[in-house]
Length: 349
Length: 263
Image 1 (cartoon, each protein chain N blue to C red):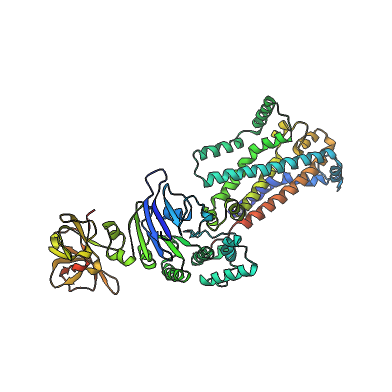
Image 2: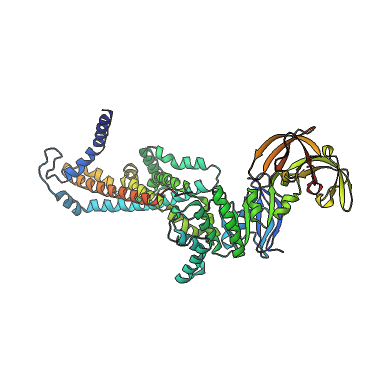
């Protein structure tokens, strides 16, 4: 059993399940993210790990101990709330010291501990600052410090960067990742921001309608999404309808209409597909290349994005334009090439 | 010109509000039994008379007792109701709130008579305890209104954060909810105390032989020679009330948070 272990966890609030038979395993020290659109059940799941709400069925175990029925104040978890929930009547020092009451530290030990934590989250010298005099970024750090100072087994973060502006959010992403490496605590983060999930996490679980669609490392999630839903949610993807013809030991053959009959490496085949299946071929915009020969098309729209540009290319016999990302091609009619190693076969639905 | 007319109006309005009240202290220092101008000299003998009036002191004691108990109980009840209404999703919360507030809209004389009948029917004696029960009916809605306003500006996550940081329900109340509620609680205590202290009709019906201060004052009005003493008493009550209101405002302002800096 791994460090954090969820087995067949379900929860509903009287209607359809908000969390639907979720199972996942998180090893000690991992930075794990729950990624999904709002309403997908990720926050409900996180709150159940913290003890706010119990699963209707299934078990949640931390470090080998089943947590079902254990109230929040007795769990070895701490949470960074989306609203940060900084106690408005306490200053920074007392906010961070809040959870240490039961440790009965001496004044000096407490002071040292808080000072160290203030330094860790780079809030040195702000201990006496009143809670209502903090900027958004500072509030976030206080919330982090307040949770980390208790040395939880698992730190839970509910959209911790959502309330910050873009530049601050990017800076905090880097800091958060560095902090996690430094303290070595298992982090479970909830976010709807795929960039955030991909850049911060060791592994990401993509959720939709209460179910986990795929759990994988960021690169794998991006390059080998298991379904159209995951591919759609993580970045941009072009899809082509195709029929699976033959599966060999090294490669498989598809009839992809416009793209012709293609032979692709077997690693690009999603599990569970068999010959004769109607499938989707998926390719990222940056993997489509402009070539001197291939499928003929016409540039319908172009957006200059600095180091690269983004194009919509119309193909004859296809209503949806193909998204292409890369350097500008020669003007006028163009040809597109679809490298076999970048085409992935997914179930059609 | 318009501004001038407006300030004149504002001045007249304030005079209308407060000149009658100021008559009280003015005549309480007037050395005459008759409440009429011109004033005939300065004296403090009405105040000295008050200090010697044991019936008055007894009534004052009764009013303080009733006021304190009513304030504490109605604030406690209001606190529980306000927490339930604002923090728990309850079926029929709106209806419950309506029913709790209803006594505010029932004339006190009707409340007084019905409570009197009820006590008679159940055989319970008329007493100060009965007055407290009657006052609760009118005071709980006030407490509830003040406390709900305070609860609504309250981040629910704060209590969850406290639980998350290892504190149980009781310690969470003590370390987070109560300090944040304190300005509202103090305001509720003051408001309900004054409402009870001031209340005449319900007390008149339910107090039996134990007069509260308003009932005592009402009784004194039958004796014209004691009127200046009543004025002195009124002046003292006025001063105490103003003092309480100022105190309540100070506490309330302390509770108001300055706007958050930055974001």
